[in-house]
Image (cartoon, rainbow, N blue to C red; front, side):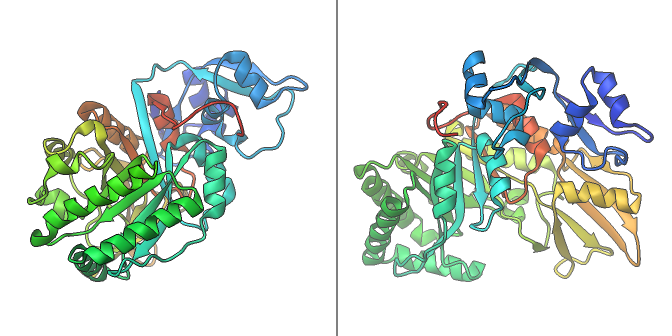
Length: 432
């Protein structure tokens, strides 16, 4: 894999020739919307095909996969544009494998809202091990809301992706979430009711397991939380469910200061959960400092410190893929960042004639521009994704979680697919 940074005056044709690939493949892989107008400083991921197949009359994805001894999912990862298509056509060139040598295996986890676009979902599912529909919320009495997740669960299983039920304490706002969790932890009756309701939903909906988002827990309740997780895990595993995850919802402040809350019996917690997620949730509007601003070294240090308490091989690091746009001057506590996808950020830079720069301290791309006011945009590009995946490799983490998958970000999955074999709960050529 090569990450190419576009220079002034370069064209897709010149870049493709430089690396010995076809211009069509370069455009297709990176989903370049306007090949005649590249942004200066944008990244393009270069993958060099090793084995290709020219589609013949009567070919099917199943037949091609069997011919080369791979799975249909591997075909779709190497050719995402085929996902959801009913037909393939004679003369099309399908990549069977790329030249790069993968560095290991990876578990991947994606978060989606119930209203995710079906085409986006179909393109993303081949890259996932697990998917969660965000989100079920529970009250301090153990009652759970319902969400419309049937179609996503069914489609996920068609692609051999394990759907995981996501649980949040009442999350109207951060305080209500924290308070609901504390009250639950002080009531055995409410905990029993919650576990009963979780089991009913798992059976009714066909989920493979559960992931509990962990807000701030008061020191006096941390022992109660570990006891609750042990009870939940035992109840689920007695019913044949093998996956219980915990997600630590981290703020930028916690990562910057390196706060790791004491009072949790990690040696006991390890016995009952199958994976621990280190996540920062970044939303559509953001007041404060998102992780794209801070030094990546803070993130690296936090992961290493957590790995001293919990086995790295069962930890996942969250990769938030939203960028933000701010109006200047930035006023702490007042200025509001407006979310922007990486694809949209690149398009915006073209429209305003801005050069994209890269900050190696935070591992984020950025640019400034002036219209009626002055603005700065920061976002994650292929170099950012590569930094996160290198961190996974150097610390021996089990996988990554993506917040969120509502938009298909081709460079994210190009980099992931080039470096890692993606694990599936089961993987064969049926159904897809």
